[in-house]
Length: 254
Image (cartoon, rainbow, N blue to C red; front, top):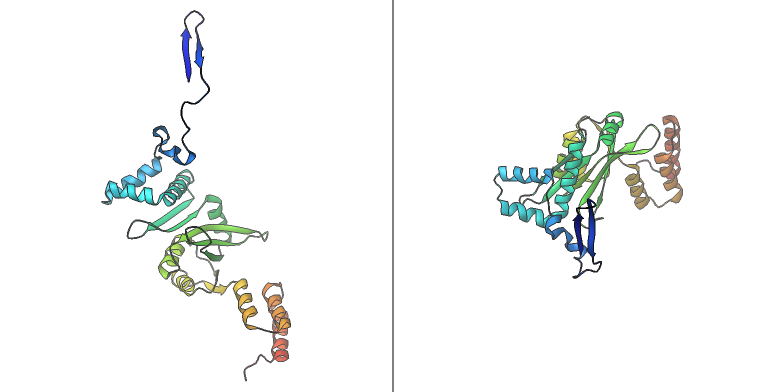
């Protein structure tokens, strides 16, 4: 407790009484957000509510959505706020039939600038069930002129369906890439062919090596494949080594 008064003679506020002990237990950290003076909505969240109401969604359902999907809503509010302060940033998402977050994609200004300079080659790979939400995380990337990995954007997808991949690519690929590198996922490959029909599709070296490792038993031949995948070599040198390997290991058709 703190009690103060104005000393009219000295024209100063002075402390009359100070009690440093609390007279009740402090609110647990997990409950602080429920205290009245800690509640509040950002302008982005308010705009989201107004937009949902304009599309005929009842207030009770909006509140239920925001309460049940709190982590998703917090992420959306944060990313939309970043996009408002950064005109070049993007934060796009769609929802399921029951108004749950389905797919989300975002990229900041520096990532989009990098994409304009280096987006002629686009690699994207996904990790699955590596987060507590069991969602698919997609990273768009490639190497720059200094051979450094650069990130063009991120995607959080509901599933590995053609529709999810196509939605993500249509937003991401404002600039049409000449070469697109992916893993062996069939839906992903089909989405690339539909959204970027003029681009050349290639499988990433890691998945090719994994396939070779699983199917080729000869250690020396596996070593050759790794060399062909990762070593910077002239076309003539590769073709010469390939012809020699075909003869040595009997790789020709019988």
